[in-house]
Amino acid sequence: MWPSRYKYDVFISHAVEDRPISAELCARLENAGFNIWYSGKELKPGDSLEATIQKNMARSRYGVAILTPTYLQKHWTMKEFNTLQSRESIKKVKVILPVLHETSIESLKQKDIIIADKWAIYYEKGIDHVVQALREEIEIRSFTEWVRKNAYALRFWGILLVSLVALYFVLRLIPAPPSTRLIETSILQRQKNLEDKILHDHALMLQSLNAQAVSLNDIRDDHVRFTNFRSYFRNEYEFNNGFATIRFKKNVGPALNLDLESAGPYNAYTLAKPSIFLANRSSNNKTENTTYLFVNTLPATYRISGTDLLDDGAFVVHVSWAENLRHVTVNLSYPVERSAPKKTKVTFAGFAPEEKYTFLKIGNTWELKSVE
Image 1 (cartoon, helix red, strand yellow):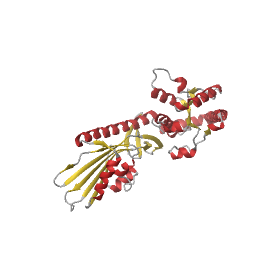
Image 2 (cartoon, rainbow, N blue to C red):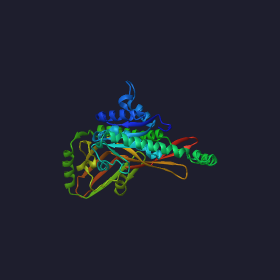
Image 3 (cartoon, rainbow, N blue to C red):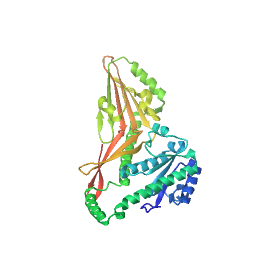
Image 4 (cartoon, rainbow, N blue to C red):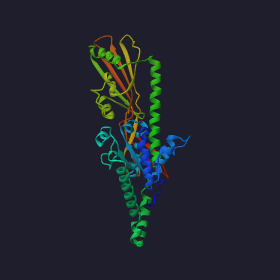
């Protein structure tokens, strides 16, 4: 192998259920002369699983992802894949070497995994083909990188000297981007803060409203009763993302990328796996009130979809969220007199589908300035 600043040539990302494939691939690549980090032989008793894996992914030049149906269903393996993908986006270099087994590019597109433009290897062609293809890809890229870095030295020392001097001054003007660790820590802290607040507020509502767990059918029946109640009506919508509250249907729908006409209590506002709660009805001289609560039980996940270095020196990270809608509160008010309007108020809480994280360099340190 050509000289490298990485300790490992390859990090093998795999599902535990696919260990027969990953173990054989590890052994064959080591026999071919590569330094491999593979959890099946590197992890020791007492090691922190997440910390060890994150550290050694950063110490590996490439990540060989063994993409199988099992891999694509697991939260942990997809977190590894997103980390490698984020490194590609931030560093602007190729990191992921995908090996596909019992899956296809088309099935990955359906899961919103963007590797359609990536070079890929199919395991069905045999382990010899996989090892040879990986070997050629890694060695060719390593050689190309080495030649590119040493091109001037191989030609004329004078040109090299001029280029290095020019590069020195250019690099002083162009700051290195924030570290991957800072970016990911900022995103995860934002996620924790918002989800903790949502769950805290939900617990208070359960207590104050004396709400009980119910099924979606219970909600549907109650919603039909409200819909069939003949009266004027008024709908109100709000979306809170932890920083601001967006109001009115014309603003909330686009902010959530949600069709509010087709989303409602009858389909849990498009939540695939919600916990649902129904508050005891309350009434006064003018209205009868009902409240539903929907909690998304699927984890919110993110991927870094792009980065920009602005003219003012700010570094912008574009983040895409899946399962971004975390909580929905629905208040229904029936008027005692039919001449008065009935009212629906829907309050959404969660992340916008797309967010921008802006970092500024203060002195020698990058700091998170804002999230939009």
